[in-house]
Image (cartoon, rainbow, N blue to C red):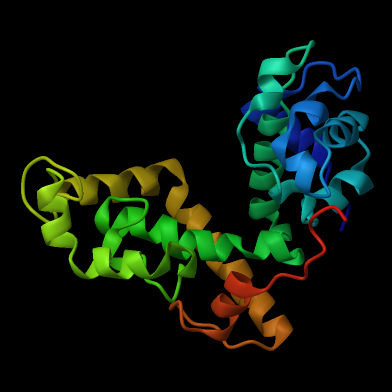
Length: 238
């Protein structure tokens, strides 16, 4: 089967159209980039590779950890003298990597399943990116012991702060009505979000089989725990 023209596919993405005009390789984006300070990441090189239209190099990017280091702060957009936005280029690369299933070929890319099953599924389940009940100490130890007390006493805490924990009407942590959740689900269906999520699951399941890890639709399966916790400690600069 003939190799796909990755640059042609990328060039049809509005994010690349908006994000890459004419990179002059000045390196201003790298100088301002917080991720470049810590990770093995250089937005100047990303822009240069995509602009080169080198299919092999673009494919390597799509299968690499590199495109997952950007935090999308868009500091690059504010500094580029040619109005490029490497952060938008990264968005286009990530989308194509997900579409082609290449994201499972890198450690950071495989973490897409964790994002989908925590934040993504939570949006459809409760209407929130993250809901207090499911931010457990086991999954988020960085929250510390005080958070466990807050979580167990959420109703009282939110009431004291003027919230409306799981209540009807307005207020922080209010219950999102069923009709609103149904409308949100329909938006995902029509916009392609549902199919996008399903593809992440399908590709992740295939990778789990390849790695010999048990896979199901929970956060307790071997593959989810692997992608959620694994760090090869080769991502940051020495």
